[in-house]
Image (cartoon, rainbow, N blue to C red; front, top):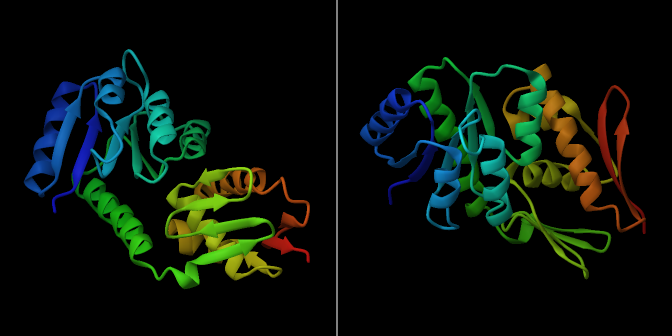
Length: 230
């Protein structure tokens, strides 16, 4: 089955080049020329991957991604942007982006990043159910479904949130060192990815805050520990 891409790029020349390239590589690609058009085009189940320019007319890529994440927590999102500011990158990851590319970029690198993200998400869906369900205090974490559930609500997780929480569960009551987490979830232990991981740790901490028996703590200079008290 061919992968369906939603591509939002307001530069028509670049948009058409990307669309033609991706279609030549076997991806079914829908091109939208502004953020509102992309938001209107998206529907859960209609696409397998989203590529969003950030600086677009009518509605920017951040706003579009937030709308998409409200409807679908799992679909991969990759941002394209002329901005190189770390604050913008962190904002993108906080919304739930899976990756971020700064213009100009090579078509080959874009393709490789798409393939890497799809491989990770596909591996998640094929993982064994038994070893990927964890009890975290009053919460049940289902890695395959990317959900964190207690009696009050079900929290949908992004692929990176789920990957990071799974590692923390595997290392429960032990220190998960930063290099291991970065290599396993981000495939790269660069400074920028380390900053991004800190954003995800803050989000995970909020998700489990209703159970006082569970705590996600920073171990200064080393990493993180998911503490589960009886």
